[in-house]
Amino acid sequence: MKILPGDLLLIIDVQNDFCPGGALAVADGDAVVPVVNQLAGRFDHVVLTQDWHPAGHSSFATSHPGAAPFSSVTMPYGPQTLWPDHCVQGTAGAAFHPGLATDRAELVIRKGFRAAIDSYSAFFENDRTTPTGLAGYLRERGLKRVVMAGLATDFCVQYSALDARRLGFETTVVLPGCRAIDLDGSLASATAAMREAGVALVEEVA
Ligand code: VGL
Ligand code: ZN
Picture 1 (cartoon, rainbow, N blue to C red):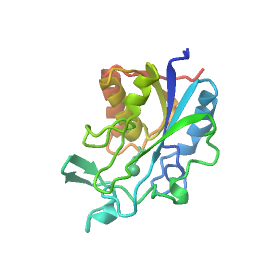
Picture 2: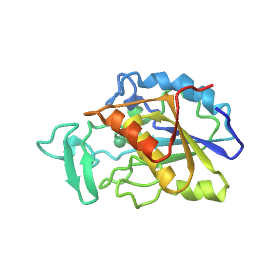
Picture 3: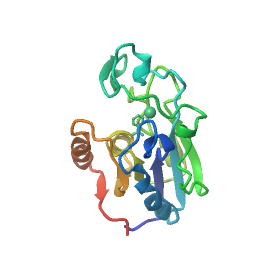
């Protein structure tokens, strides 16, 4: 993969709760750590996202009496999957994986920090309209391409990649640096949707 000075590496949610042993563990999630670390050393610009929910967040099944984790509800902004409690602000589960090389990151975008709305994408909350500011950051700095990896392929990576395309950025997802939750075929539909939207899916890191 050729990397240019105007490229930004966006590392999505490489946090303890998404790794084996975590509250919302993604199978083999920690396998992305060496891949993203190697990538981070090759980019001039590295940005991290961190899922960062208040206790009692509305995306937690425990906030909806009788609702099971991984079921879906309708929120004022649209459908929302309900998750086990995860990435609660300040907890060990919300911390970055201890092996993640964070030193070269110039910005950390925290998302999902408002109780009433979730945020999968690094660019918009789940209403698809409330911005995080990342698009402005990229534009002000003249960065043209976003290269992504992290967790989970079919949720936060997919939403970030589709939004990046919608905003007009060249977008690449490095699949060996991603792992999926894969709920009811969500990995296959995410891959298809990203390809359809013009996201470049890279199968090899080198
Ligand atoms: C994520 C579900 C809930 C993700 C975050 O990082 O993909 N998935 N919160
Ligand atoms: Zn979350």
